[in-house]
Image 1 (spheres, one colour):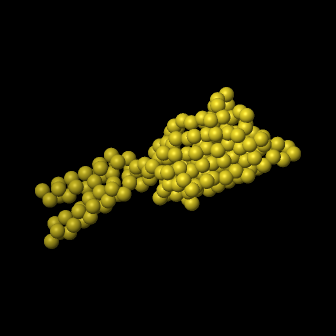
Image 2 (tube, one colour; image 1 turned 180 degrees about the vertical axis):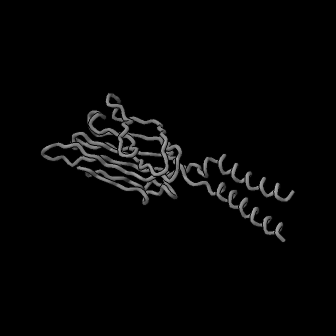
Image 3 (cartoon, helix red, strand yellow; image 1 turned 90 degrees about the vertical axis):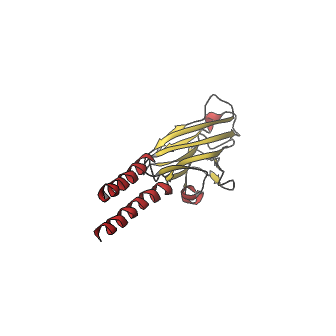
Length: 190
C-alpha cells in the first residue's frame, strides 16, 4: 500500500512537470532574465542605439545614420540567448525619418537570420504584433537595418514583450514530490 502511494506521488509530480511544458512559462516585459542589461548590442557599420529608459515595459531601437563615402548598409542588433523552448511575442511601433521605409527596415533575428517586419511599400509609420518560436540556446533579438546610412534613421519601440522563462511553481511541485517520496521512503524503512 505504501509503495503504491509513493509511486503515485512520484508519477503525479512527473506528470505535472510535463504538463507545464517542461517547467517553462512566459514573461511579459524586459525584466528578470530579459532585463536589457542581459542583451547584447552590436553595431555593424552603424551608429545605431537602444534606448532602455522605458524598460521594463518597452525598449526602442534606432538604426544607423553614419553616412560615409560608400553609403554602405549597416545593422544595429539587440540580441539574447533563449533559456528554453517557447514563443516570443511583441508589439512594435516603427517610425522612419527617411522618405520611404524601404531605406530603414526593422525586423527580428533568429540565429543570425533577419526576418523583416516592416513593409517596404508601407507608410513611414507602421505597427503590428509579431510572434515566433524559439528553442533553448537560440539567439534571437531585433534588428534596425539601414540601406544607405543617410537622410535620417528609423526608430522602433518594442512593447508587450513575452518570452519563455523557467516556471518556479513546476520546479517546486516536482521538488516537493521528490521530498515527499524521500520522506515516505525513510518512514517506510523504519
